[in-house]
Image (cartoon, rainbow, N blue to C red; front, side):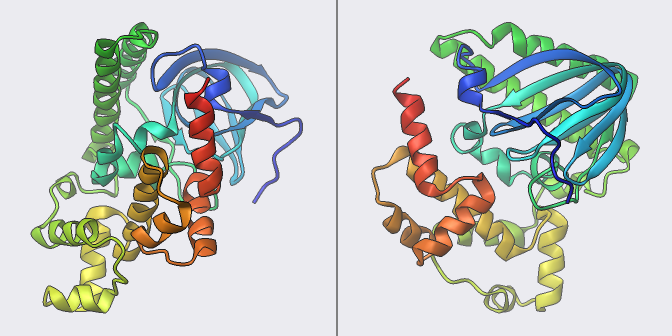
Length: 305
């Protein structure tokens, strides 16, 4: 994995977008020149659309050409920057990661959305990513959505918050569905958005018994399926194995408990099925980039600002 060039900026949502009222921020900039520009990592999601020009994006996984119509997602914890740019017009939707643990937590369970924001995104310790190529009509629609989001990002009322969440959801859903269309050559079948009864029952079992020590053998035999077939079925519709999905679900549940309860960290570990506090801390850090204690403290610090 490549090391980031110096200097490397460390951007945090709270500090950079403290004046914003929305759980996202829209900004644009133009990059020119052959030297490294704007190399940074961040604690928020970045959805990037290239509106014009061309250049090279540098990432931990190597350099890759980008041009007008390129669209990609970078998860928290990923550093990147630009080199050899000619009139590169960059439009960014920076999304506060906490929104996916609260108002938009339910979106994680949608295969199309999960593919866009998690499976095919640039993320720590995983080089399996995609740069999408938008057609001209899609670029126009996407750019219009950027402006719509920007128009309402400073509304501080309850009605404004509802508009922001609704518009952000529509924006992300539109992109996710476009990327899954046959024209884009997606590996994800749009029909997978409708989970089979077996997958739905699996998700229900996980949700109702999240702390249980589930095994693949128990799950597959319970549905009368061979273990290999059950794993393939689940991965085809959800993009990951059953136990990997359960691990992701546990991390999300833990994040919600850390933010919205006073339950001790050790008890949260027990409640979600990661009984060893040290293992809980390692798994949580894998998903959120910080320890459970740091995650809770960041939320408290933000609440008191």
